[in-house]
Image (cartoon, rainbow, N blue to C red; front, side, top):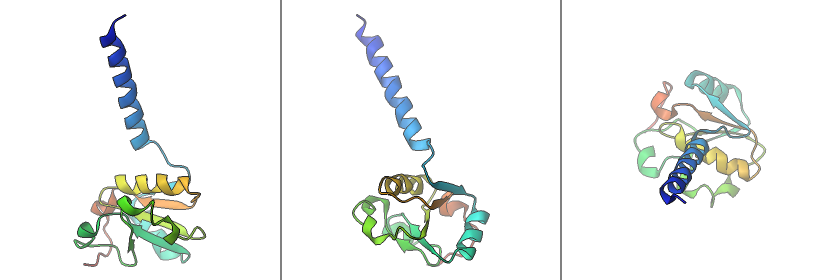
Length: 128
């Protein structure tokens, strides 16, 4: 039996799973381009906007009305997020907000959207 072949198969399977888990869709999550994200924030009054970046990143600028719940803390702070509101998530590039949505989805949250491209793609107002 060729152990190198087995190792390579396991390695490729792990890499495929890792890539899939990072880029696969999240049930109940809408991927919104910045203009649609901004439109929904303006029109939806039953919402909560969550910045999942770390506090040091938030100091560089945040979308007005956002509360900061870093991805590193979201599992412990899930009780702070009401299930009866639409949840809008963003981060720097869109990867962490998608991870946050995956965590929230496992806790029963269904009505979520995230800013595709993150705050780097955001053209709207930012506060410091």
